[in-house]
Length: 106
Image 1 (cartoon, helix red, strand yellow):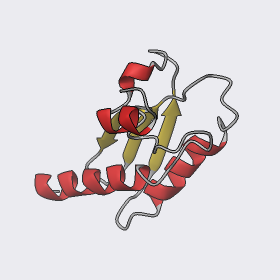
Image 2: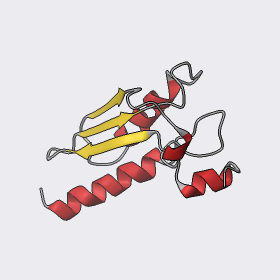
Image 3: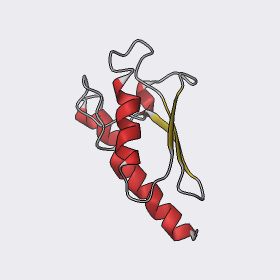
Image 4: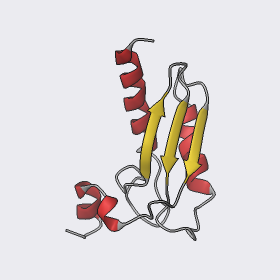
């Protein structure tokens, strides 16, 4: 696989993730800083390491599954693995400036 195609697929993965929102916060999970890592492997397998705003988040089951479904729907994607971690724990500083502005933190 050529690198530009792989990079393009990563951009599509990010775009798909940006359509997933925490039900309690009007900002997508990417801008919130919940996505720690995105890897696209040579056979278009995608690995996403993410966290939630809190281990007791009411959407703990829903958000990772929605991320997986949105990424799986991208044409050309093979397998998708979404791993949830709380290390390091989520902190408000992980948000993008855009998210902080949207939520009134700046």
